[in-house]
Amino acid sequence: MNYPSFVKYFPSFLSLVFCIHISTAQQHETISTIHYKVKVIDDLKNQNLDNSIKNRITAINKASQLIECRLQFNSKESVFYQVEKMALDTDPYYNMASIFIRGLYYTSTQDSVKILNKNFSGINFNILMPFNKESWKIMNETKQIGDFTCYKAASLNSNITAWFTNKIPVSYGPNGLTGLPGLILEATINRKLTFYASHIIIKDTSVKFIERPNSDKTIKEAEFLKMVGDKMADFFDKN
Image (cartoon, rainbow, N blue to C red):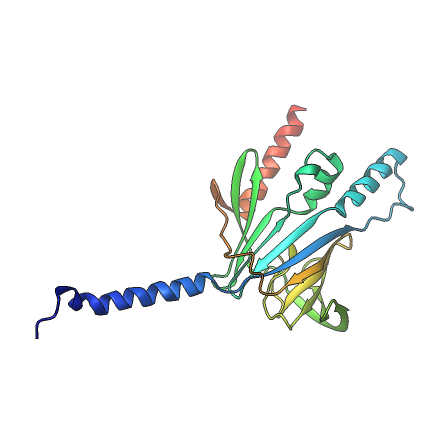
């Protein structure tokens, strides 16, 4: 029997369709979103500071309460960023408070990659950060955050306390924190800066995919810190 000529290509066609289906399924893995708010803790009562300086610090701390961040993630990767608020772009206290949010963090647990995306001197950098930099000790202490029982953990190599839930078994958290056996819903850095989950959306259908950030230049963290240090030294030398 003579078959039409296209029939001999049919197995290859099926293979192509199958590969496209698998690729599309991977790209459309379910994404969840955590909304975080920020609180700056700074007790000025016993500090010997000029009142004008205290007033400025108080204004910055108050402005920090307007900061909102998002963590979007699936089982393989996540992105953490500050939500832009155009109405506050010209507020000097809000801009100062935003310095606490170092930039956009992209994490891939599949590739063991962590990137801090940041603008400096008019250049957009992808800074390669140490993956799972923090070593954690899980404490025998729990508290309820929303519907989730969370466990306390303390970093062994920096002043960070975190509360995570193993009911969401992904190793992500705010401001690039990783390395715990569950999602971090609250974290306090240097006893002054706290990120806390204000809203949790499991299976966020409004988010279709997670993107690795584009940049003008990719650089290691040590190189970036040296560049910033040299720039600051040059600034003070000239002024």
